[in-house]
Image (cartoon, rainbow, N blue to C red; front, side):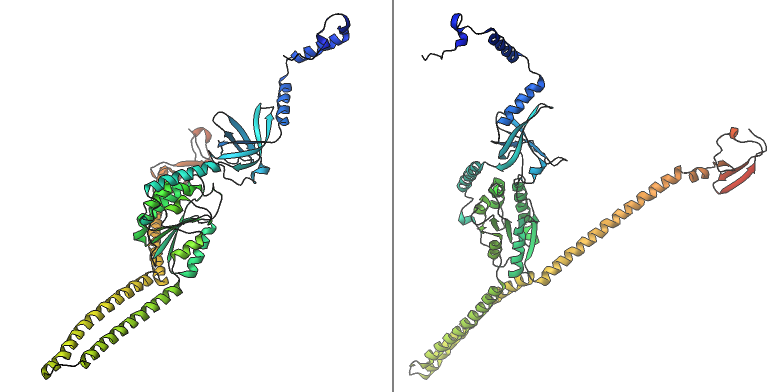
Length: 476
């Protein structure tokens, strides 16, 4: 065992005895150390110790956040399983917060401890804050993907193809986002006659998953009635936390159970979310999604021209084939019997004539059905039809509005009449009509007592149908 260093102060007697003044000083220091501290002195010690810690980084879960107060400061706490630490972001720093603070959000805060001596409260002054938990998001994403894959949510065999010419498209997104503007710009350029229905939802935050899934279900239920053939769910880019709402089981179930084809375009091309894996079609951007959904008018016109040319060519080839067959039959060597020589071409000609109308009519019927179907779709999605539906809807809405306003005005008139009757019943005119009167002095004051009237005074009596002026001959 190592021996402690030699300290002369612990030696007694002889050479190592301490002087008397040294002993007195030591006793004074000992007494000072054992003296009880004042509260302010103790608070000063705590404040000095907190300041000595300097700038720290602390990780925890946001708790108790209620938004900015009247002064613009942000107050909240961060916690773990054992402890809670109050935090504050001053107004000067609040504008630099780039993440939406929410209950349960995992964050890392940087700042310094502050001890408020007057209130005896310890808080952490936050200079910067950032979200964390990226590893937790990845783990949750992988776990949900494994579960959904086992249930068959990602199977390509269950995914539907998009219609060639959709009557209407429902876009589920934020109405104030840039993604919607990109989609509308593509629709106006490629196929402006298609009906666009915008479903404005929250696409970020704790309530986004429920809002998007409810929108998908409601649109799917009404899709056939309102002419929706495709549902597009989209939003712009963002951080992993911003896009986490689209990695929720609620949205996956809504897309999986949807009977209308769903296209998902979430974030950028490098981002992958659960809704994109479950959707029937995944697009890298909102612009790419609309290009996938809508046909190009010029290409569609070229396809119709090509189909028309192909049909004409097929009919021409069929007629030429039958004509050559007749020529070959008539040029063959025939039997010696003249009757048989005449019967053979006639029988062959009858057979060809019998087959030709049936085949031609079948092809013409198929072409007619295809043409009618395309014409019907074009008429349905034409600007005139779209304008007509919008005008009819506006007319119906105006009728409902007029009816509601008339009902509202009628109720208001009845209420005014009822209140007028009540006021008249309790008002002075109603009282006078029941036989009462009001008596005033000559200067217009109410005469409430006979003691206020003297003999010879002129008084005014107000009745329901006029006034009387009289002079008092005898007082009460």
